[in-house]
Length: 194
Image (cartoon, rainbow, N blue to C red):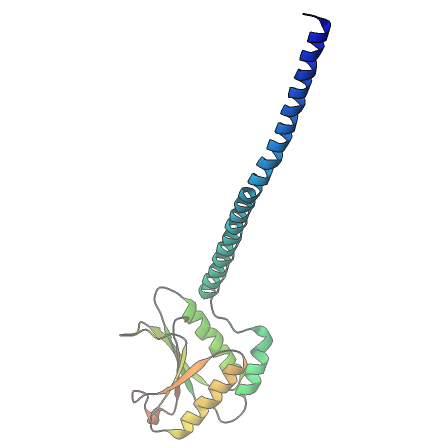
């Protein structure tokens, strides 16, 4: 083989190599172009999964906070205690009997004690505090029971309700024939925490 023929083969080889490089660069460009939407879909799916995981985490944290709040015993906030006591001192004060649900938790008992302290500090007389199981439907929250036929006690029950509400303590008033007007007292039932 002559030098000219050899040089011709080298030139052809270089041309083929350059062509292969051009094909490789073009192939790389085309493959990158084709991979871009796939990469975007994968990144979008990953972002969606992360977003969903964050939402699930936030929901779980909210549920945990709600559960902890429900499990936390009721208390009378010291910051509003004085305001409740001041409100309780207005108007006439009927004697109050406190009845609390007893059973698997001491929370109603402890809350009844705190309510008794506030009522007495506000000038109300608490005749007695009793606890026991309730037959039938176990009450929840705070219930002020008044005789069905004594309007003066119903007014005093409203005053008690308003004073407690100032401290963020919600109550409901019910009239009940089992509470005798002759007793001249209100019955405050401390039920389970709602």
